[in-house]
Length: 356
Image 1 (cartoon, rainbow, N blue to C red):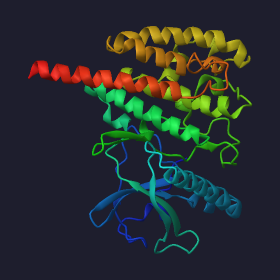
Image 2 (cartoon, one colour):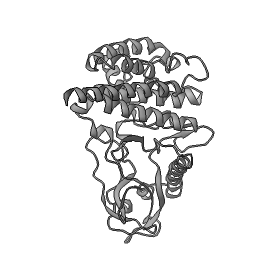
Image 3 (cartoon, rainbow, N blue to C red):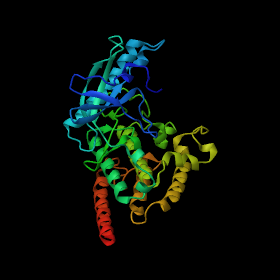
Image 4 (cartoon, rainbow, N blue to C red):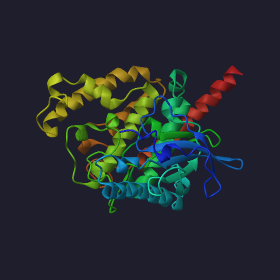
């Protein structure tokens, strides 16, 4: 279900907020964006500063037949969870996370005191997400893509150290900031935190199913938090790499390569039984995408995708950590990606010098 265009949250344009921000205009959504459920987006101004406002749409709680008190409690809990996670990340100074600048509520005119109260979060305004930024020319810009992948990996490593799993990592949730020449993780509405009850923890996968790892699509949920939630993040990081360098979604590609009787819509067996078919299809996908990647970085990129997107969650992660307590740690990938980016920077400088 999408946000309601007639709700109070959809009517913020022109309002002055108590913290000095003015709602300038509705933010233009990217045609490729898949987010925005139960929220509306705006550009806000405070003097010379500009920001991005996420207004939470609670109107569903007032729909016909809704249990209004219960649904309001659930939606308020979701807002509080996301807000608290973001301000925890801010307190911990996580550099690769899109941090909330402000939060609050505003009463919208012409609505009742309950329906017209809109909760919001304000963020630093980004220059777009990588789904909207990546075109054919960017996809073959090794340095741009490697920097994006490195920042996303570092951002996930930062939140994982706080026992937080993002759960909805996809191209539209990786934002570009040109001024600082960096990429940051956005939208923590689906995240889980170990030891803290989150509103969507009862869901096997709270994020966008288009990007879900195979084990969850086939109904298998590992009992361990790290394998179930953090292992899912690792898969989606590998999927980001596949998108940046090949423009593909590994999940979609693997499902396309499966025999019809093993597709999730037809399969009646267990995840364990379907794993050999998934692994074979995954090998086919890797063989298909390898020629699309620049030969100078191909071995590193393909290895990363192979390890992070392994359909067998028990084998997912860096080979040195598989089967150990550190299996789902990204520390080794953070250490490896840094030098790869530096080599790409050197190659770019040398190429430019030769062409000067």
